Image (cartoon, rainbow, N blue to C red; front, side, top):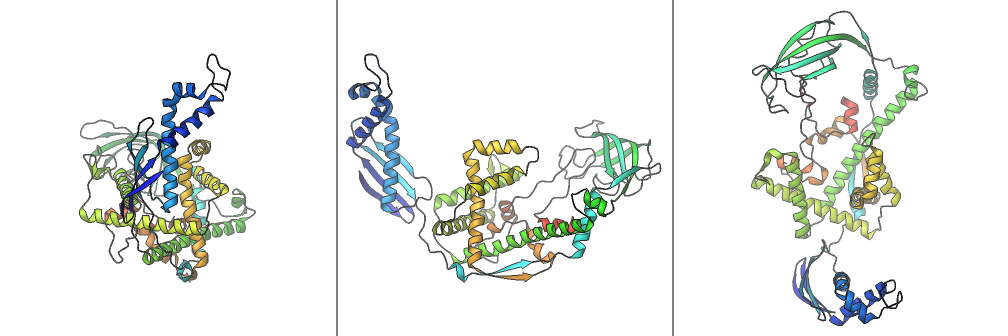
Length: 493
């Protein structure tokens, strides 16, 4: 085999590789002999077909398989001999080949940059921690009590806080047409909850079971259903029942419903759950500061192909979540937004390479058991569909490997944290969760410090969530949710 270097510029290499015809012929003979062991031809016993006859009949059919193997084997040998670590799959182009002649092909490859990982023991990190206040526990128990409250039918006019059970049929005022989702039977609405569009609940306050009410409202503009946005509507509502809710009392009997021994045990379990959620946020903040420190301490050339793939991935993410910005099949962004996305992509790739290098040099591996736990955790996100999720990952190797990356990343982060000097700082819950309101992934802070993040940056980081709406039966879309931790939920519900 002959290897000729065509180009070597930075991380880009192009080589011309020649595999002699005699090597190709030898591989063809070996492959034909393997097949000949079980092949049956008239006039010959199984496994006794002469090689020249096998070559005459099946030589060209085997040749394609041999060429692919020859390219793969020679490519791997060249990369190994020259100490090249490909960043992406090499690009192969066959230049010359014919039966009985040498195989000549070119290989273009971008390699991983050589860089030294900083002294991880020199890292000094701060981990914010928050204690669970009694008020947070009381609020959580109050929410649990409210979620498990009982309701009693009352024979009186409905007031704020009551739950109305109703049938309704809606229509648009100007064309008197009913649109999908504008009717429901047995629908429950808590007066004062703000679940339905403005004015709907107020017009039912003071009504009793059996009352029929014509509710006039105007859909907000914008609205998640564009055909209804800003339009006047009429809902014919029949009140079926008025129910008065009563929160459950947090006592030993109530605690036993959750498998707890008594109210004290339930109180302790809630406290531990909230503390676990606080700890998750603390770890996230620690991880953010760690990755910021790694990003700040390293500066090396990024393989252009990897950068382009990450940049394209970010654009696709934005295009899926903000289709209104896609014109003629292309995402439209300003030059400033493009530059910010480029900086985000560069940071992501750089951090990924640093973590990968740390893991490689320190033999960090994801075990089968850890991967299985990741699959179980993923399945738990889809109650009732666990078997389908398990089967999906069992039959889809690529999807299974995609779960390996975040597990590997967390293991490497934990490894680095063990080496670093970590100081805990007690903070309030507000301080612990405040930055989460930015809804920007910790991987996506720009390398150039001190610049504010634009809308494009936020979209690329985590995507602005679409407004969530129920049916058009007068309900308004839920407020657009920002990224918040379980701890934040524990505080505010």
